[in-house]
Amino acid sequence: MDLCKRFDVRNIEDVIALIAIYRPGPMQFIDTYIARKKGKESVEYPHPLYEQIAKETFGILIYQEQVQRVANVIAGYSLGQADLLRRAMGKKKPEIMEKERAKFVAGAQAVNNIDAKLANEMFDTLAKFAEYGFNKSHSAAYGFISYQTAYLKANYPVEFMAGLLSNEINNTDKISVFVAECQRMGIRILPPCVNRSGLKFVPEDGEDRWGDAVVSIRFGLAAIKNVGTGAMELAVAERENAGPYQSLEDFCNRLDSKTVNKKVLESLIRAGAFDFIGETRAGLFARLDAAIATAASAQKDRKAGQFSLFALDEMVGAPEPAAVVVNAPVAEWSKEELLAHERELLGFYVTGHPLDAYKKSFKEGRYKKLNQVQSLPESRAPVKFAALIKEVQVKYSKRDSKPFAILQLEDFSGSLELPIWSDLYASSGSLLQVNSVIEFKAQISADRQDPNARRLSVQEINRLEPIPFDPAEFEKQTVEAPIQELTLVLDCATDSVADLQRIQAIAKRHRGRSPLRFRIHLRDGSTQVLLAGRKYWIDATDDAKTDLSPWLVS
Image (cartoon, rainbow, N blue to C red; front, side):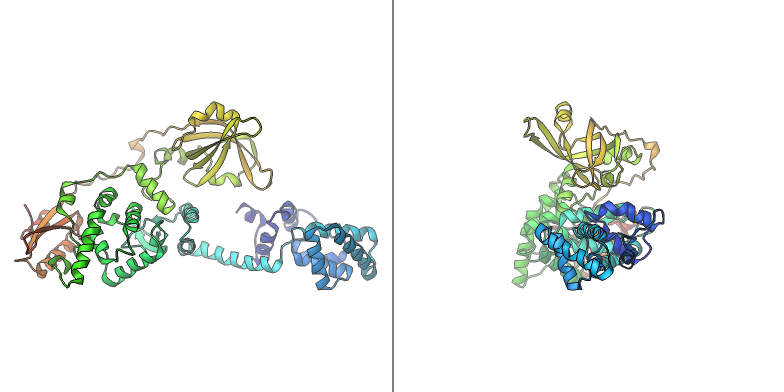
């Protein structure tokens, strides 16, 4: 990005040149190219004939075609012979190079009366540029695609990023990179949901906390690890054909258990795809076996031609065992477990971040971000960073067998691998624990293998403590009233589908946060307990209770 700004891109030719010159080798001429482009440095040609070949690139050869044109114009090579010369220069075979040098010098003298000294200098220049010259036709194709994608990203950012994410739907690592870019751009990534997600990533209209319209991206079901495209194609098709899923049991009941198996269901629960139900993920996970068993029984009954009252209306799903739901509440997983599941299955955190307690430190700009490292200038003065340690690998030096560590670090912006060499490891190794949060000071220098890359040399490590929460600095949060669950009783001997339709209409009229549960007495004397889908939960006011009084348990 910084180079694009320095390059002052104005047209497609600039884009093409930028792609060709931003490669190992020609990078050394970037500053010269920019200075000549902006008129700060004069353009020089070794011979007047060079101008017609290298004018567009300010006297610097960056394309393979330019190397061929020099051989053609200066030394009389045919274009075919010039291409063979370019290939020979790329392979650097001394015996071939010497033969070509003699041919080039003789040709330059015969065609343009150029003396041997200048011809040899031109040949040396060609040999140097031929090593890294990029094919302009390729660069033009890449440049055109770059222009198109840049236009789409600038003008249709949500749609573009949704397409980009969908293109990498089977690569969780790549998805995490693109999700981080979405977050940098201010695009919200919504968690997966079996009732809202598509197979891939799709834009979704909604509102932010202040009620303003926003467009977000909904996580694609097929992008959840361990789920698979085939199973989710069936889930999406069933939802589009028969309507939203009302519960975990409804989902299990409507889909073939051979395709949407237990492992798929476990991954969906752990990824938060059933959060719309309003139950804890741990609770859903605990009764998954019962839900699968009940669904299998219901599918068996359907094959035998049987049906029951609760199967006649979309309001409820398959029955759930009363003992499990009513008498065995399950505590939610810890925040660490929830986040670990999300990171594993989605490639990013949805419900929070392990560094949330340290967010104030990061927002105050005390530390540089990990994703900024490669764009930071060299600095001998230590620069401060902070990060969560995700992995520690202890290794031993081949020279003196002293231990050192390779850390995998993560902050809100991304991740980074960082070496901690022996001396510092000896004094600070006790701080390097997985899931610990550290701050460190490091010098920034050019990488030895790539001068345009940056590496960090850590000088000091300290444990980072979170800044205590100060309520005065945050908006007052509205405390919601405790959720009240309402239970309705239906009897297959006396109640009908019409009663269910009346209850459905009442629930729509009094939508809210209170779960609505059914206790259904079947004709065989048994009782089944069903939880209404989240969209049928109600606001448990006196009016709502009055409307539901014919079935309401007091």
